[in-house]
Amino acid sequence: MKRKLIHWLGLCGILALLSYTAAVVFSPSAYPGYQWMAQAVSDLSAETAPSRQLWGQLAAFYNVGSVVCVTCVSIRVSEQKPAGKLFRIGIYLFTLMSWLSSVGYAMFPLTDAGKEIATFPEIMHIAVTVLVVLLSIVSLTLLIIAGVKNKEVRSTGICAAIALAMMMIGAIGQGVVPPQYFGIVERFSVFAAVGFTAVLGWQLFAGMFETGR
Image: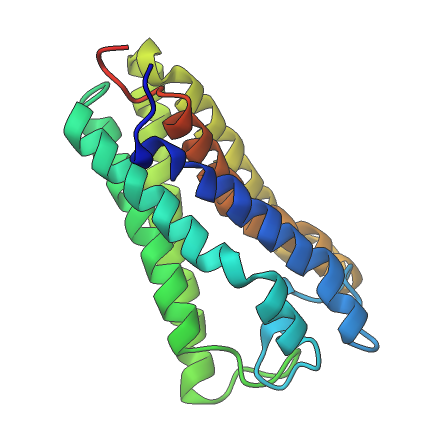
């Protein structure tokens, strides 16, 4: 397969994952007293967090890379129309989720790290989170169903199932585990979407969405 620019842009998803991972791993070094096993990842990028600047530097490619990747995937899926309408809708909803996450969290960041949610921006931050989670669940579910129905996109469906399972572990675990372990299960959720984005990016690069391959 002769790769076009849109295929190469799929690698942005992998770079976004690396950027996000670097931010999660190294930003706590600039946040005295941060307990990664107990605290949420979003505390690292809160407006008053001492690690905010380092987070911004390390995660600089995360937001733009994720959006570029899934947008290119949507464009290619729209052009090639692999697997059927259900698969395309799942991809489009996942892309919408990525855009909402990138724009919504930039508009409504957390004001205080680890503090009670009280201000309007913080409430909107939670509202964005709810919408992101709902879109993630619906889109991944559709992709799982599409993968079951069509072997052409079965690998995508399997990866979507893994991502959804990670989200469920995070969501359920946060209400089950002791507070001192909240951060551990929360990371299952936050890495699910960015990890699946990287998978879609690689599949785009590898030409897995080409109907004529």
